[in-house]
Amino acid sequence: MSGTSELPPGTFGFAESASELLRLVTCGSVDDGKSTLIGRLLYDTKQVMSDQLEHVEETSERRGDGYVNLALLTDGLRAEREQGITIDVAYRSFVTRARRFQLADAPGHVQYTRNMVTGASTADVAVVLLDARKGVIEQTQRHTFIATMLGIPHVVFAVNKMDLVDFEEERFGEIEADLRELTEHLGLSDTATIPIAALPGDNVVEPSERMPWWQGGTFLEKLEGIEIAGDRDASHRRFPVQWVIRPMSDEHHDYRGYAGQVAGGEWHAGDEVVVLPSGRRTTVVAVETHDGPLQVAVQGQSVVVRLADEIDVARGDMLCGPSDQPVAARELEAHVCWMSERPVQTGARLAVKHTTRWTRAILEEVSSVLDVESLDWHPADGLALNDLARVRLRFAEPLLVDPYTENRATGAFVLVDEASNETVGAGMVSAASA
Image (cartoon, rainbow, N blue to C red; front, side):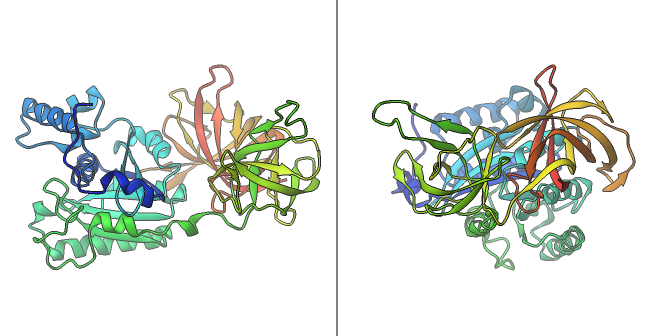
């Protein structure tokens, strides 16, 4: 490591106080400035290594950009640099005094819809960029719709390139009104619209003196202030078993624990649980990590759960609250994004990976496919690359699912081609029957 840019005092202590992680995906039309915005965030929050900055300066000069092109900090693929577009999902992380961030820069082209779905699948916040000159266009509608379909709880619209419309308040107001109409149509509840100019840095990290009419804070301040603790599913206790731990040593011969990631609810010692699919009931003795017992474990934490009774529990089983169980689904309806270049027809047989469980499925029906330009649904009998569709699947064995709108962990699954082991689709449960 050749060195770092100068950092403010205490920068390396940020991680201690900024323990909460916010995952966000940036999306928008081609040339709206997604990569530039991320580059500006990284640069203005002092996250850029000096050798990285030197490389970006050299590349910018070689390309004849006429300025330090901060978009190159995220456009890491050579093909992207040559074409000036983003064709893959670029992940970057940075930290401020308020929290930690993980950024996924998703491509804007229609033909890379699958990449956007991948980048957005775990996001807490979708940042949808718009060009202030163009306003709300087809890609804005498409990306906002996908964010809605994926259940992303918070959407921030960044109206970029305000410098190219002379920082006009009236123009921003027109775009804000159009966005309000779009979000009301889609039923989004937590949205914000912020004017920025990512290239010169206006209102990204520092307030803009050229927009005195804006009193709503900077883009970074908005991200730092978003509350995500309430987004967790605290009401549906779900724990898919990933691994059974039995050390089998003389010292730990009585130990048996079940490792996995909490998919929903709060988990404490003393909780009553039911083991599915067997239906056996028992009590939680302890919830542990390698550091010792926990008072409580919440959604997203990786833990070991120990049970009071020695019952048969295997990988793929699920622990849950006795009074609130998931649906043991033989059939379900779902939204699917098809990710394979090989199309598929109704009747196809596929493997399904859901939480920690595998089974086989038949594509019973493709009821409709989304027209990404009009956002209308049209009848179809098959799926092609990047299609967003409503489908019905039938399983060889029941899967323990919840609607995706209730629980993003137990409501999501992936489809796999058994012959090639290729992931060919990502799905979100909309309705299920036992």
